[in-house]
Length: 210
Image 1 (cartoon, rainbow, N blue to C red):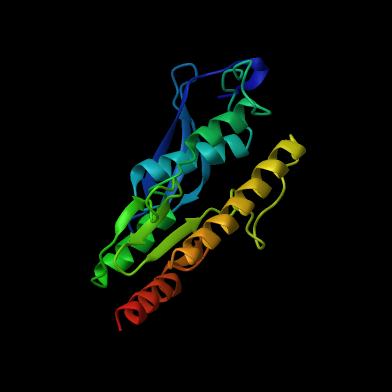
Image 2: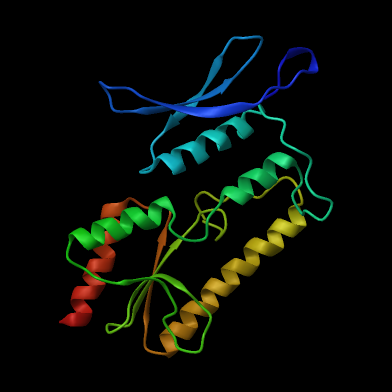
């Protein structure tokens, strides 16, 4: 935590539930000369405490409140803050994935999680209905180049442009491989409202069964 006069202090993220509204607020908390001041970071609304804490740290980094250790010499991250945020990103069991899975499970649908639809291929789908040959992908807006929300990075532009374009090309190739093998690929953006997304998947499942 950055303090005045160039001082630093160890900080932690604290969560506070507002009883009347059931909203959750994240605060940065630290110790300074016997006191324990806090700074409001913002509201968080994920399903688990771990995700809310992770979001709190992301907000703290975003506001420029932290002074993390310098990145390792071989790190591709432009800054320590970027490196820390990227480390926090998960490639499975994300909030959007779990919300979609929970909604489908509540509707009586059963599926495999983080499974490879095609035998012999390393391509992995987030949800798989093996007998019906339906593969569902929940794509992150940044990593997969969402046309609505993707914003190019201002740092290491060429690196990230190549990375994102490569991901998009891989996604298109995966869809073609699945189609050639008789599979239906359904792609859901992380920003999609869960219910309509679940409706799309359920409709495809019902049609394949029918």
